[in-house]
Each structure stands twice: as structure tokens, then as C-alpha cells.
Length: 292
Image 1 (cartoon, helix red, strand yellow):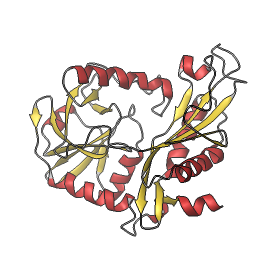
Image 2: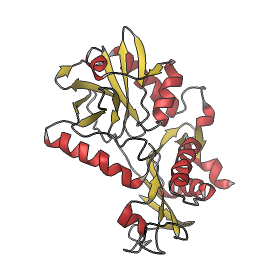
Image 3: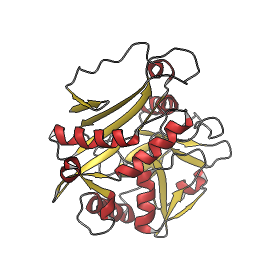
Image 4: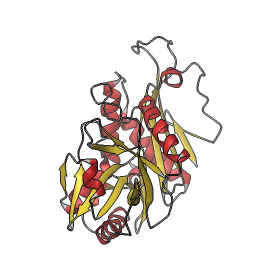
């Protein structure tokens, strides 16, 4: 693991943060989860600039003057110094000192990146995950923008905790009208008659892996009722950590490993590992970039 903060590489245990940090008390920070993959030319970060652009939108929402150029360099430096061929990158910008009131103007902003080994947080079961519809509702976009704001993820933690206690791997958010929103950390797709459909909802995160899959297969994107998922031939979820993960059951409805999901999983791995000429600009080679 390699840490980086405000332009300096750190060892684990270094880089102390004040216990009075505003972000610690109120969740006033914004983060991203980014993956780096081994390629024939060395480690490369997948869709780095798209992730940082989304982080910037989250920072703007909470009035944070974040330095995206600095965070980008931090991602490259942390990954290069880690020696990892594949890694998970966690860039984070948060308010630290300057007061504990709810006004954020004038608070100090810290810029942080961690590079660490990673596996799919949903596990390595290739037959898929067991999902339960959550009794919780997703944060409505009218209250919180659906971006990666630190404090907003308590909503996901509550739903994931409830599902785990019931023996499931993941929770599915559905709104009051029965439309699917997303899972606690992944967007949702389904397959019916060989056609792929992406769940669209105003309260869902605009996922970068979701956008990648849409471009890979030309899936339709639209609002989807929970009943449609239960009638689907295949269901899968997408996210930076989850990549493309099959759903094996939803509220007792069972599926076997689906051929469309399996094909998309294979194609996605070829893409992120640079084994295809498609979308080469999505991969930022660390060795060359750090020399700049």
C-alpha cells in the first residue's frame, strides 16, 4: 500500500489528520474509487480523468475548491511508488480545520490518495451474488446530489448492513413507486431476450463502469420496475470495484450464470487490460505519465 497527501508520498501511519477535521464530523468530503490494471505496457489507470471529473462535480456541490490536477498527479505517483501491477486507487478531498460550524467557506482542504491491492468487494463467486430488496430508500437527488459525497454513503452502509444480517451479499434500492434505483455501490442491468437494459433513475450514481458497459453493448437506458428484474433472463451489477458481477438471486428469484453477462465480463476484462484497440484513451499509463 502507498499513501500520498498534498503532494507528498507517505508511509502507512504518517500523515496525521486533526480529530477536529470538519470531514470527520460531518462527512464533508468527496472521493472516487478507481482501478489500475496490468497491461502489456505496464500498470494503467482506467478512465482516470472521468473519475476525477465526477469528483470535481461532487466538490463543487459542497463548495470545495479542489485541485484536480494535484489529485491526478497524486494518483499517478501513489500507484508508481506502490510497485503494484494492479491496484485500487482512492482519491479523497475533504475539509479539515477551520471550524466546526456548518459554514464551509475558509476551511482547509486536504488532498489524499491511497493505492492498495484490491479484489471485488462482492467476492469472487463466479456464479453471482445474492441480493435482497432493501427496506431503506436511496437518498433522493432532491436532497443530495447522486455523487460520491462521503457523508451520503451512510445510506449505503445501513442498507448493506441490513442485507448482510439477513444472509445476503447486497441490497437493492427501490423507490416508493416500485422503480429500481441501484444497489448500495453498483448500478443495475438486466437481460431479456438477449437485449441488455440499464436501469436509469435520477437518484442513482452516474456510474463510470455503467457508462462503459452502455458503450460496449449499446444497451437501452430507461426506468425499470422491480417486477421487470424478476422477469429477466439475467441480471448483473456494475461498478469500479464490482466490475461486472452477475446476480444469482433476487428476493428468492434464481438465475444461473448467464451467457450475455459472461460475454460482457470477458470483453470488459480485455478492455481494462488493454487487450483491445478500442478506447485506448481510457487507459492512462503510469510509467509514461509520471515522467511528465
